[in-house]
Length: 431
Image (cartoon, rainbow, N blue to C red; front, side, top):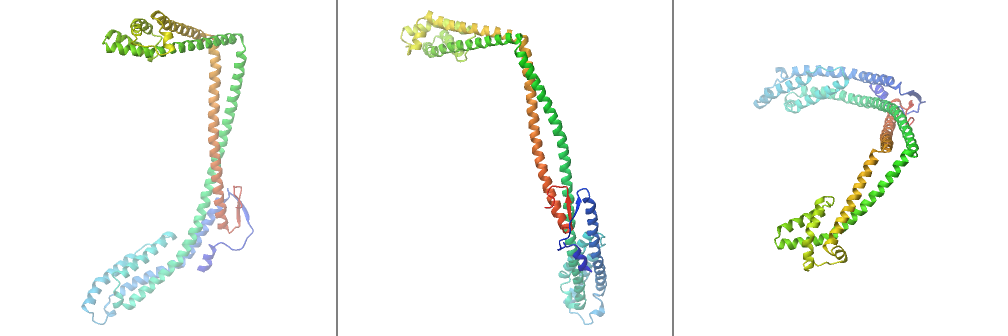
């Protein structure tokens, strides 16, 4: 009987004709298989429960026989009596405690209780009961036989527990696989909805961008914008001229700086504080390119006399053609420096004036609004594309998870059904 029931848990070797079921119908089949598995295991436990319970009662009855006067007719040696007096009560107490258990109706819990019972009884036997076989050989022999009987039943239950655990774990694995497949499918459906909305949103943004680009191009051919474009081109020319004048001025300043620094060292050595302050201020403003400050021109003029005194006395020698061209005489030097400043400042003022006119031109705001709106739409389209890319990555991940879960379902179902059932409608079916 026990062997026949155990064989029901094992996979069949014959190749049966396979039938097909769906993922939706699978939970019902799994529930039925789980109940069948538990029922078969419980059937296997019925006989063992009876045998174990009878053995437990026999052990309790046996314990009552330990230590009776007629069981040891011969007088005991004092040491033997001492061992009997101390160890027998401890042994009986520990075994009785181990046997004092209310067995669970749950097979798994019952199995653990029996295993603990055996372990506790043998601990008692190896502890305080280790000398009792000298005094109570027959009783100890019966005790060992009863414990062996319980142990044999536990071994039978171990096989049933192992087989049922394997099958129940397979059932749980299929359930978890179903949960993963359904979860992935639900999320994929949600992603498809989101993706559709994003596609519609992107198409609408592209359409608006194309319309704005067309309107911008149409407006760019209007008389109003052409007038603005001509003014803008003139402004760009003025900016280039201003930059060229600045570079010319800056080149003069770079030529003059070594002369100014040598003049500063001379007046510092001679401790002339006034000239020292003026030259130092001029050098600082030149270093910071503060050419637009009126103080810069003032310092160029006020320091020129001191500089040319040093040049005339050969205290400051002119070393190259650029210095010689700039420092011809005081008037020429001042005219070149201040003239360069004036030309650049006038060009800058003209640029600012043209810029203000352009900024107030009707076409400027209108054209800028086109560009801003188009740029905003391009950013939105780029953001949508980035989010779509993330969704594609998530879809790829979910598809892989579905494949893994489907493979687990098929593998476990092949073992559970002995190859009789194939789950249709999932990735990896028939694997």
